[in-house]
Length: 149
Image (cartoon, rainbow, N blue to C red; front, top):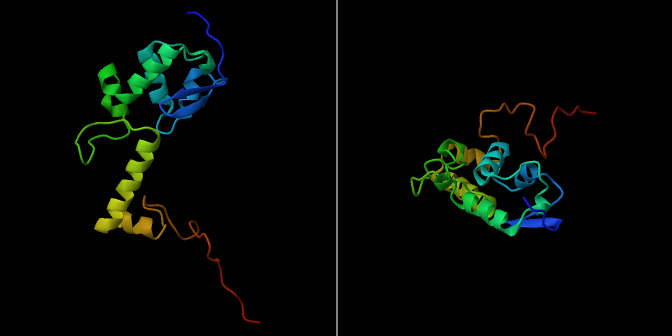
């Protein structure tokens, strides 16, 4: 493996990543890529996870981008994807960055529109995953009882 010149910032699929971090941790800076997906992408592209991301060659960056665009064709199992059985297409997908943000916002507005339990909880800015609310989630309101003087 030949050393290329060091870049302080590298751009992978519309995201600037820190060049001084090891490749495994630099990929985790992208929204939608966790530790397991970063390791899977590195394993598929056959790169060194401990190599600093700033030393990546341009063809290696293109390899990583192609894997992130369609991980299923590169042998990454579908159970690792963050969007299994998409509501609209029915396919297993892995979304990153703005696609992920927009899809989550779209899902929340759809839940609000159909007035399901989770949608109503989102509207009221209350937790929708079963947490207790007696002491927590009390932003903006005072807790306790005021005494008369």
